[in-house]
Length: 100
Image (cartoon, rainbow, N blue to C red; front, side, top):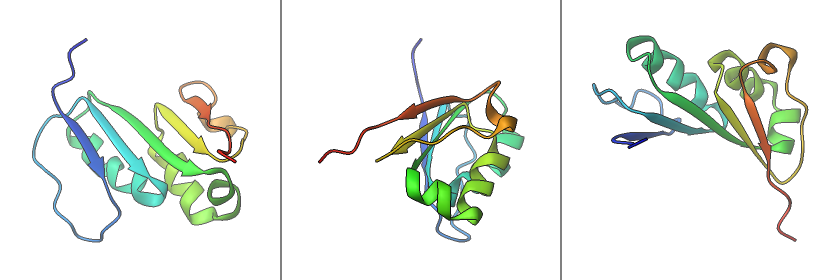
């Protein structure tokens, strides 16, 4: 599969999103919330959210934003988590080990 466009979304408030179909979207932490709005307009893309295990477990605002975004993949840095039941069916979990 040829990937033509990749969008990396940050969390800067009110930054402009491109008016462009993309194949993949990557976000970190709570920026997943911004992907929700983008995905409503452009339906065919794959969302990957990257977050630290502690941040996901301890910061409810971040974890809720990720859960609501319904990502295709969650990459957990520095630890492990269990996927919430609402994501178990359609979200792939990848846990990266600590690099100690």
